[in-house]
Length: 117
Image (cartoon, rainbow, N blue to C red; front, side):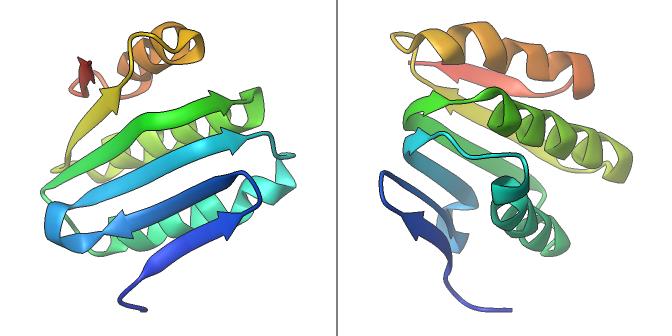
């Protein structure tokens, strides 16, 4: 497993920072369902590290389409099935999709903590 887990393309970046147990998202993610596979793989790699807490830093993500939102929901389900991981989602209350879609993570992972800033 690589020390730096990062996916970068025109307009977006997703990376894991082990020291802070944080997966950062920034830019605009308008990918097809199949294009989200690499991001799903990164999420699974991080989960395989068995963190006790994991932060999703979403404040820099201006847009996420429905395929990306579904990817996050599937990740929340995987966390619930695995157990033992406290998920914290750092969101931006001024970004419409975040205020509408991120609170729904509680449906899939009731213990998720959403921090709107």
